[in-house]
Length: 278
Ligand SMILES: Nc1ncnc2c1ncn2[C@@H]1O[C@H](COP(=O)(O)OP(=O)(O)OP(=O)(O)O)[C@@H](O)[C@H]1O
Image 1: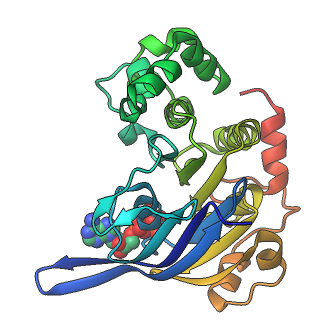
Image 2: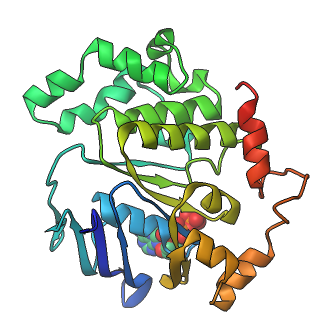
């Protein structure tokens, strides 16, 4: 089967005066429709830069990105092949949501990119109400401003905003890293449910191995702008080949650990937290 997204030899070089810095070098991976593909690596390893190059926010300085076989970049120009088809959710909803806009306007903003007829069809009050309710908020919340919500609620708003155009592919860039541990579990479970309901494909960026294990089918491990290992989550967790992956795994508590803290959630803790009400 052809991949939905194919990244080949992608690179990003930043230049400042005569200095040059390669944030991403020679990265290859592909994502099939319906898959959740994880990118993990330490801070500064280039994960977010890859997410931005896929969604048109940064242009690659090398390589190609194909979506359904068509090239997304033509030099520095991003070909928005199907408007609204790809969306991105950022780590920090505090800074990614415009504080001067009401929730309704925030959620509906991505519709501006759509052709008029589609914008009208997807911008109905009925759809908006169904979406805000589906992400766990209330219709009356649409009139409020972002500062009136908790971090978890703000991320739910960001998720609704990403879904209003009915995308097929969503980049989730550390979507729960800024949230408290019990809230993280609820938001991750919501993302899993939405994926199933809407046949979504995810690129899931995280620095947390437990979160990657919980969410992803396949994964790539990044170090200093390069992928050091790619494989299924099951394979990488049972047989990590690269020394850097082995180091990442050695920092994980046993999956049977009872202790729950902000940095390392075990699978059991997600299930436990998720079974409580939010
Ligand atoms: N606009 C920019 N100009 C210059 N350097 C940049 C720019 N954006 C990112 N970088 C650098 O590129 C490298 C990769 O950054 P990136 O944000 O992709 O890493 P990351 O793995 O997502 O890290 P984090 O988890 O901390 O977000 C870092 O060294 C960063 O400082």
